Image (tube, rainbow, N blue to C red; front, side, top):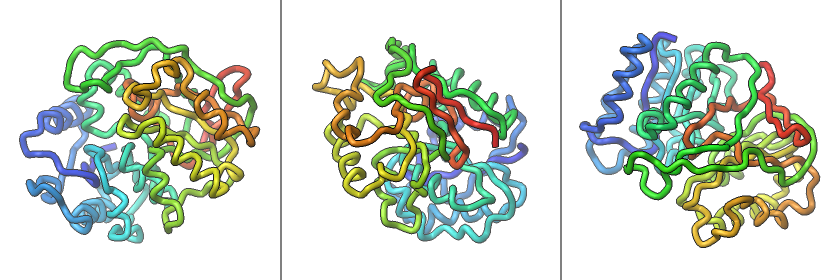
Length: 318
């Protein structure tokens, strides 16, 4: 990998953003990779039009020297950019990498064979969540040494709790019990990974995920309450989505989601037991991906195997 294009589909940072400059230094100096940023990234206006944001990624699609497109940050409204992106201009195979609100583009990209979407930390995320960042970076480097290889998805035993105030260091270490099983079973399927509320925005659109036979790797940020999570899941149930999938892997619940639900912290999935009472596919939680630190990368479209007897989730070879 020689060149990475940095984009911001959700929101634009100020010019003096320390985490951006620190990230550029780490990537360019330590890994000898050139980073490219278009002028639109540096717009200082409060809100940049979806057409302008789409223009940057379309340029990177056309650039034959760009091997990877990496989102700087999450935020809001990445889904409004999708109609303005010309996917027909992709010059060659490219990795695209981000998570959270930019789940919208990850899913859209999974419909195109020349794009390889990875659900992994954004650039700002990797540079900001200090104490879990080194481990997250190690996970990424390990995966990118062999993009087609098999590996196990790790579960949370000790994580950094940044949900109260992510600008306060050092973060408190929270101890968790590792993998938690809500529904037992063994299965495999292709990966649909992303932010729950953002995935919900794509239902009924041209960019809707391919649900049939999928394993859902679902995560959410602390902006959505437990009630909000239930509301989305019950909506999916009524739409018949759970009749079409093979299993679910949950992320680590942030305390922000579980505020006022202290009794559920050890096994919050029990609060969703009634949602899945009619289904027999396996469900396992506390996986290290999404809004958590450290965070493992997850490749969309690849096949994944769940075995709740051994409490393992494994990404299968490409």
